[in-house]
Length: 81
Image (tube, rainbow, N blue to C red; front, side):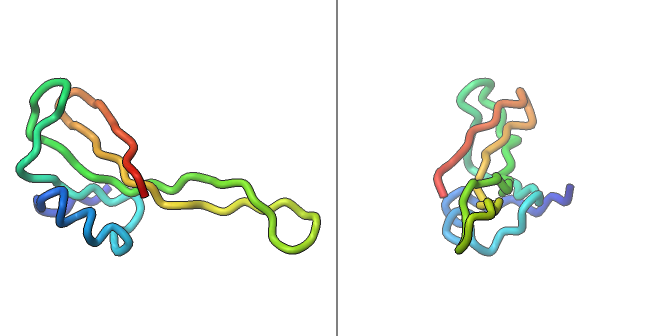
């Protein structure tokens, strides 16, 4: 995975639709709730969603969700899209 330079969480979330899935974006000016580490990354992950298009054949699609991960303790929190 590629890591980008640190940005504030607010600035990353403001451009969330532009972030590529799987790329770690370093977060500055925040601490982990569990271990107080400042080594946080925001990662966009693809999650499968059920659905169907026209017709009876089921289809699978994916939706991008933001996750905040602490590199200190490994805690991961799923955000809101």
